[in-house]
Image (cartoon, rainbow, N blue to C red; front, side, top):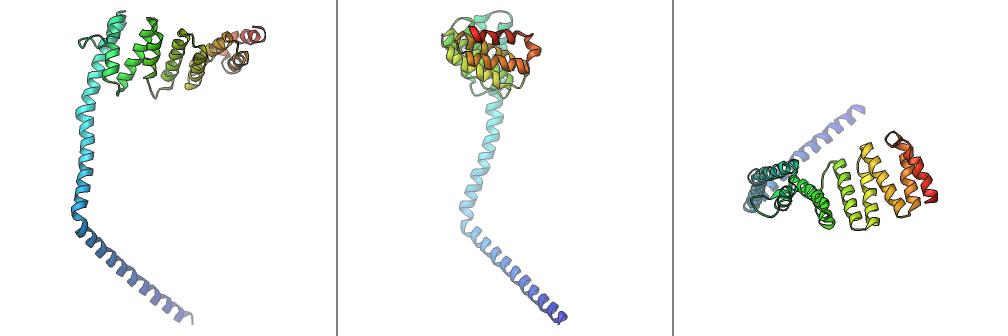
Length: 235
């Protein structure tokens, strides 16, 4: 009985195999018919895809790469003026001959160099006391570098303080304090946020910042956080 059962099983498996290959033949035939029927539109779609890929790489090679090179050249010229303490020339933006950080930021806003130029221009505008312009330029800057982003928020907070908008400054300092993984950067902006909160008489917030310093960043603070915590009780 066992032997007959095995033969029956083999016969069944053989039928299934035949059916499987018949299905494959049908699928192959259907595919051929599909390709015959839609060969022209498929060819168009494929052509569009190829052109899209070639266009992307062409754009990267012939548009983006030269644009980045021009941006770097413009940025380095402005940076040279900055190192020579020629702030106005470094800021630029008044002629095509000397684009400076302003011109580079405007012309190459889509590049990382353009954004870094906006950051530098914002710092120079802050130095001039033009706080709103400084804030707007700094706001254009973006980076994957967390420490640079912390510095951006800190500089924007300074601009808001210059505009007597200290509540907004405190919010930005809070972002600066939490943006970076670097312990000193975190300490620096946490301490600054605590001082601003204390000035706004937001003592609970101030205590929160100084307590965090006391807990995690004593090595940088030389015990000053204890004094500030005491001030939150009476100031």
